[in-house]
Image (cartoon, rainbow, N blue to C red; front, top):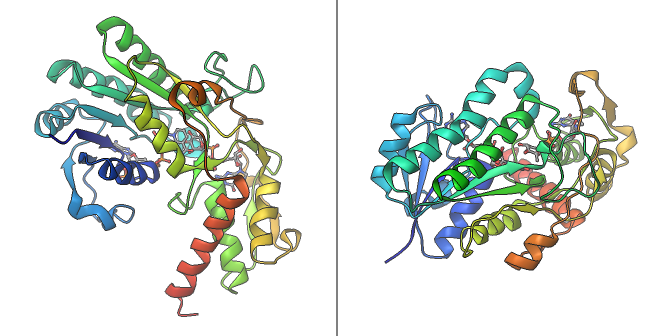
Length: 324
Ligand code: NAP
Ligand code: F7E
């Protein structure tokens, strides 16, 4: 019989790639979707006839219990979150409700319905924040720098706690930044690649940006969902860092993206205080040795290939949209 998986956050970047990955492994895929007045199935419309969407919300325990009863999954991937860091300062309580308490709700719903379900929690490198060591490993202490990071630390520890308290197969993937042409336009990689493409097509004339010095370990989302799946196929539940072990500044990101369309980034880039954060995470670089050794996981896309892929996708899409 086909395995059944439930993905919360299926309409997001990672949810769409994970759904594709699970379908390719012959899973019956269920996706939790919240009610919206306009449909936002852009990232999953190409697979919508192969998956089952079930209504619910991470803020509503009853809906999570109903969804688990209906889907009867053997694996749950909890990707739903308020995931944009700046919004976590303007909506800290909502961020805590969805990104932190939402994890407890889904874990408790699993306990109430079927404690044999394997559970994946989308933890984040933002938990390392003001980093205590370089590179960051599974043992690096957390020091979050935003309400989002704080909420993710809660989600991480409640997952560990339910594993230890109730013997659930519950794991956390501590994933470093991962990007793709499906990344939301507000995140820095997609903002930059989209602007590079727009400027080269004459549709915009500048890129307004915040901190150029921040450093991130950026990988490809398609590679990272493979690691999520591998974590739930192991004999024992454990937590893993997933990263490329390479870091780049925001400025390097802009240089690479603008080079893809033969533009000099300096001519178009304007620093704008509005995009600075009240507290910054200056440097992230992960050590994925444990994932490599235990899961056999490694990234397949380099930073340069990733940015080129994103610029090209934006360029082609804008060209088609504007009949250029
Ligand atoms: P994303 O594109 O922002 O997607 C977030 C998803 O969560 C969307 O499907 C969204 O639904 C859903 N969601 C938000 N609030 C919800 C609620 N109250 N109830 C039900 N669903 C809700 O995020 P992503 O980049 O795919 O990331 C996936 C997960 O990994 C997130 O938990 C994120 O925090 C974590 N993470 C991401 C990265 C990264 O670099 N991408 C790194 C580490 C960890 P709507 O479409 O309806 O808004
Ligand atoms: O910012 C700097 C900004 O918003 C990256 C989420 O998926 O990854 C993501 O969080 C860096 C920061 O991602 C702009 O200050 C400069 O230093 O793309 P971002 P993030 O905050 O790292 C982690 C792992 C997650 O878990 C999160 O869910 O870029 N930056 N100028 C800018 N960032 C944005 N967004 N916009 C700018 O104009």
